[in-house]
Amino acid sequence: MIRAQVIVRPRASIFDPQGDAVGRAIQHLGVSSLKQAHVGKFIELELDGDDVEAARTQLETICKDLLSNPVIEDYALTLHPIGKDA
Amino acid sequence: MRWAVLQCPGSNCDQDAFHVLKHVLGQEVEYVWHKETSLQGADGIVLPGGFSYGDYLRCGAIARFSPIMPAIKEAAAQGKTVLGICNGFQILCESGLLPGVLVRNNSLHFRCETIPVRVEQTENRFTHRYKVGQVLHLPIAHGEGHYVADEATLDSLFANKQVLFTYSDAQGGTSPGSNPNGSQRNIAGITNREGNVLGLMPHPERAAEKILGSDDGLGIFESILVHHGASVPATA
Image (tube, rainbow over all chains, first blue to last red; front, side, top):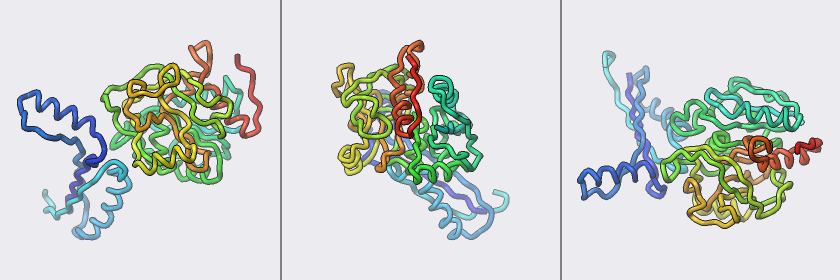
């Protein structure tokens, strides 16, 4: 089995209203040192098989086409093999 | 003129669009379920508003991969008329038929109200029944209508007369206060370069009968009918 984890975050050049609102709330709660907050997505996938590189090739396409929109978002994909019982 | 109105799980303006086309304008119109693969020869396709696939991931991101989408892309490539309203606009952007993308409103509020929208261009199949600078009163109802594209794309949209509608005040002036969602350059509706695919956030199908408050949106549908050589019924 392979576990893939994808983090999708708004590009720095795009105003992130959710991050802005969350950041203000954190400042309001007393963290005056907060400089920036960004809200993105965490996506976890589990795949049959143990060929990590083949899975990476497939999932890079999925990340670009479906899980993120390159106009507004960047993504980071990590994969690692997991035991059958995991 | 033959029309198809797309239905995805979560579409909720499909019946409004169907009603305007069939009962207000007397057109031939069929619903097309997202799992179908043919538009049955329709000359005009409406991608209606709603929350297709629950807006999961991003608005329009999953609808983009519907079985019907290759047929819609083919129709667009053939020069047929494609009209995406609200969620339909979002789907057209996600699918690459229109540039840019629609993101969360700057205010984070879902905006549901009737607002002034200025007509920017009239030399095209969608707005030739209006006048440049005309202010329409159209309903909006969206949480993600903030249009985003890079500066070069924005410049080319204006240079190529692809921006048909902008948010304005009631006098037709543009100010930050007249922008309901933070859209770059107050953009409310754009076409593709070829001019046969329009996406807009306001709902013209909800402003198509005077008895319901406004028929300011009817001109879009009438413009399309005239372009396709169909007769426009007297509606007033």
